[in-house]
Amino acid sequence: MTQCYRNYIHGKFVDNTTGETFEVINPATGEVVYEVQVADETVQQAAIESARKGFAQWSAMMPVERSRILYKAVALLREQNDELARLESIDTGKPIQETIAVDIVTGADAIEFFAGLAASIEGNQQDLGGDFYYTRREPLGICAGIGAWNYPIQIACWKAAPALACGNSMIFKPSEETPMGAMQLAQVFTRAGMPDGVFNVVHGDGRVGAWLAEHEAIAKVSFTGEVGTGKKVMAAASNTLKDVTMELGGKSPLIVFQDADIEEAVSAAMLGNFYSQGEVCTNCTRVFVHEAVFDAFMQQLLERTQNNIIAGDPLHPDTNLGALISAKHRDLVLDYIEQGKQEGATLAYGGSAIQPHSAPGGYFVEPTIFTDCSDDMTIVKQEIFGPVMSVLRFSDEQEVIQRANNTSYGLAAGLMTRDVRRAHRVVHQLQAGICWVNSYGASPAEMPVGGYKLSGIGRENGIETLKHFTQLKAVYLGMNKLESPF
Ligand code: NAD
Image (cartoon, rainbow, N blue to C red; front, side, top):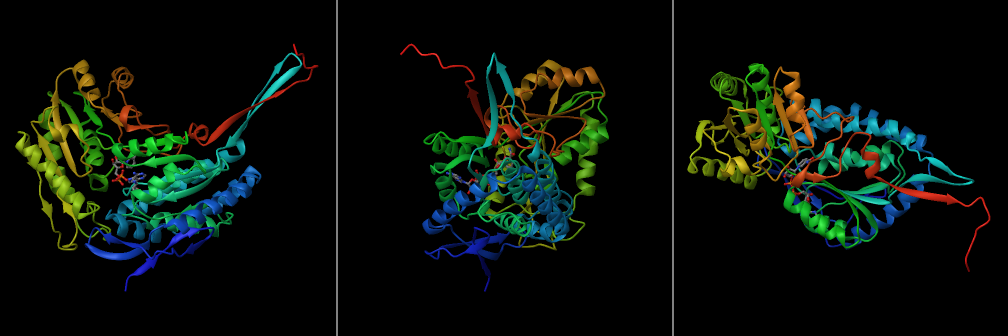
């Protein structure tokens, strides 16, 4: 008998009435690890009622009190880091060496960052010759968070942190493929002393997500997922003119100039394609390498990919390439690889599904590298969300900027160069919300992240995000006798 988890409403797990459940599979074994109850209508109504009460209590608290509770949650998350990392690896198939070092840590960092800002949210006032006005930054109300499966607990933290710091309550729906992290976070919040109803977790697939996006009681929806789903969420949210934050997909470029440190350039390309087995939204899946250093870059890239990647049981500390999220997703990634071959790219490394000894039932795909790619190939244009790198040659700065921007996405970009003027000149022309220079993938809580073009709307993290979870009220004070023509 597998364990069945329930929806987390008003500080506790509650039963649904329909009895409908879904299964969650460990991607590294292919086995069902637990079941989860779907949030049916009874649960949905309870979630809204609870979030209303949670909002009333939470928004009336002193901001420093909210901070204190959020800081307590940060301490609990850090105390539980290794256990939470293990659960996250079982849900996602990601190597434990990553989840221990990154997933919970970066989630806790965001809560800590926004806990520190909660008591600094302020308005201003201006004199108008006797009369005056002042502004208040007020919370929005009940916010919805809808998460993707690649960084489940981190996404839940990144959405909850600014929302709750600003005094909102949140109903969070994790991906149905990875529901564990959000449930753990909800329990941590309760143990930290957060009032019931401030953070509820509802489970289910897109239908539950669509309900959140449509519901009139919800003021905002912060969404992480695919562009196509994001468009649907935004369309549904438009019926009630909800505020939206959209963290969507990407097809980001990494540009390796002729003066780059090749070792670091290869590190950036490998981090930005093989970390989390390629399931990272900001991945630099289009690696543009200057022709003068192309051969040196390729030689080192192939050598390090062959020698340094260890695919296997994600819970083994040496594993650095985990399993893809599902059999369906693995097959999709393999289809893209097939299309790459058919469209004439050269498969320089990998390209097949693998069954490591330590995890024979898992959904693994080899790290895969294509060369001789052209900009119009499917593998160069579409987000694959797997360990598949396309390497492209370039010879001229303006040419590569134009090619890097030639995509409907605009999430991230990276460039490797020792020339400081070139770095800034190029960055200023790149159409991307996040640009890394001589680095790739780091996303500290202090730094705003989000996309240009189809990659998103709004930002997560950074002080900027406070604006996305508050609304501005202007208050005009008449100090003089009110004149009227009537
Ligand atoms: P997805 O769009 O399939 O699902 C995301 C979430 O939306 C899930 O919780 C799902 O249940 C829900 N959903 C599905 N249909 C819905 C609907 N009609 N209304 C409301 N909710 C609905 O995405 P995914 O496969 O879980 O995640 C992978 C995608 O997420 C990739 O495109 C990746 O680039 C993107 N991503 C972006 C960021 C970022 O910060 N920009 C971060 C992580 C992942």
